[in-house]
Length: 240
Image 1 (cartoon, one colour):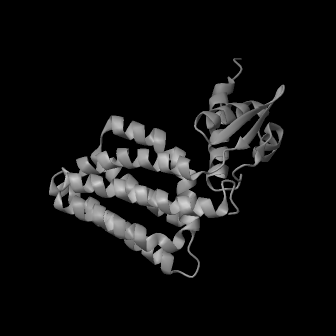
Image 2: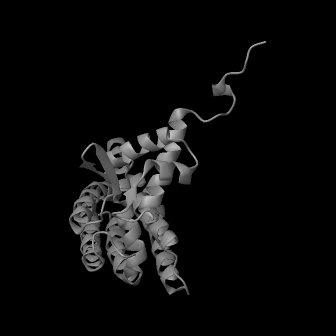
Image 3: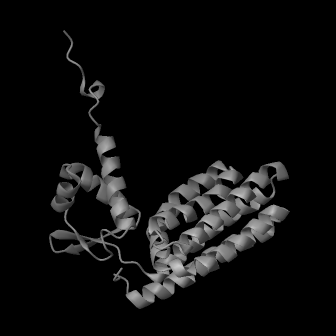
């Protein structure tokens, strides 16, 4: 009788375990559950995620490459910490995202009206939901983060440029912890964001690519400035 292979037994592969550890760690960092500047110890993380140290080590290496984790040499040891949040880093990431998404908006604005109309309607609905969340008794940062993400992703997906999508998928996740901080610390500034979104929507509605690109880049630049003031107030390690 042939012994069933592990691959067919439903056991997760090493790659799957690394990917899962990465996603869990990244989510903890993005949502501030592993605070900026806090030390990361492999054994503690492995225990918290209920996995071995091997996938944790690989996940941490990837997070280090992406800028979420910082490694400092201490003699023969390496000390890992969650990279602090800085206004400079936020400006760089938001500017890059703004350029990529600005190009997407330009292309989306060039589409035929039959394709632009549902996009415009969806973007307006998302902005209405953002304002409704603000008016609720207890605005949820997680929902605000999700709505912001959906708003920007709609016109990126509509542009349908494979290389652009690859660039967006590579850069946008690195900005996520700044975006989550924005969604939680700047809830009262939602009307400003929605006003800027309105300029993007009007440009898409009229089919003005240059205006749409400019509006997207302005939105991201202003968001970086608003967030930078929060980081300056709370400090790079934060008190959120």
